[in-house]
Image (cartoon, rainbow, N blue to C red; front, side):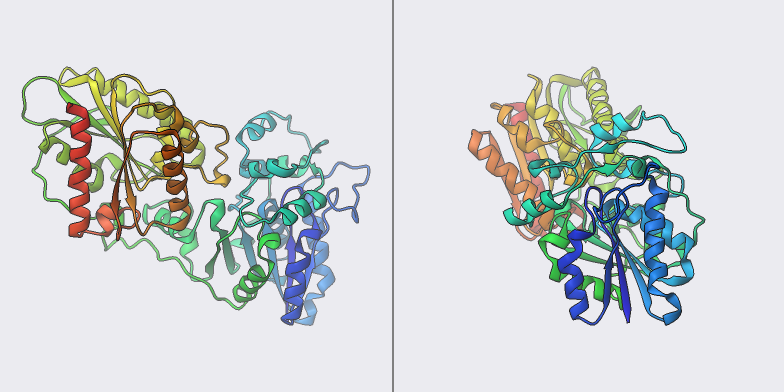
Length: 506
């Protein structure tokens, strides 16, 4: 028999697991939701402040209560913050744990506190200045209603379920977020399963892409003992789809799930496959973190500045400005008589958007100062998650910005990226774009989570009367330039570039 020991996330206690536990029991398994000290009413805090070690002890007690000598397999399930005490307990009882399930959470590392995974960047910055002591006092007040969105997507939660989340919530002991997690490394040898809630921003394909980009932090996820599942819901699947979650947990315990492919060094990764159009060679002129592809033409020329997405690991080689898609677009621009520009920016992690935006602004200033460039005729072209960087330019378009273009963009930030407010939220800022021409290349076979952001942007643009032109690739996927080398793709690329050049030169 499998015994599931489940640990809830921040502000939520054992009560959120009620329906999931019942369905696991109906399937013949045992299921225990761990009451956490200082969170659950059944386990009030004593006089000593509650920290992460307190919650690790709560989980260890649940493991020991099962009686490992009985031969029953124990599967630990950690949701959100709950993965921290789960890993701490697994580290101390490795011989008793058959599998660890990461339920819509990150991958905690030794010596790093749970605060690092808090998606609310403002709160994270405020708490990061808290003095580090051997014990921590205080608590965080629980969210209510729409405030939950700062902690994860509420997609899939009915009004009744959201009310129940409010009712079950409790203040969370601050010390559990501030005390670093201490691991010996024992959990790394255990079978693990990641359950990704795609409406919260991450799917398996995105993780696979990070592997193929050579991100060393992702390499361990290609171990055959690591499996993945997706749930098309928000951050609280135990309330939005408890039956589906129970089914996934049972399958995870059985060793099922999708496995990631290791990066194949003998094959060409997707992002380095050839550009689908044959474009003439144009010499590259490198200036700092910017490359210019200048046509053989007289006088200052308009420029198209191409902005890659990410996150891209800091050590990835070649860097994005040398990727075939970016270079191909730059050379295609040069064949149309304008200067193509590629650049590198430091979007190495989802917390790097402000730094990336500053890098892009610096690159544009460098380009506009070049005597070969007509500084009053610039187009910006963004790709994938670089689409979030369009928000600054949509909210206050400068006079020299003659066109803004985006290919398969992400246009609302995933909830778990912690990008609150209007900055990096193009759906909210497009209403300020005025007459700025916007060209949007839309992939018909886009991933559902990205397609939803594009649909929201198109609706917002239409509602405010924005100057939007859509270029559709009905059979195109995300990264269609290198994934779909079809005539449809080639026609769309030429059409989009000519639309941009027309807006630059008119």
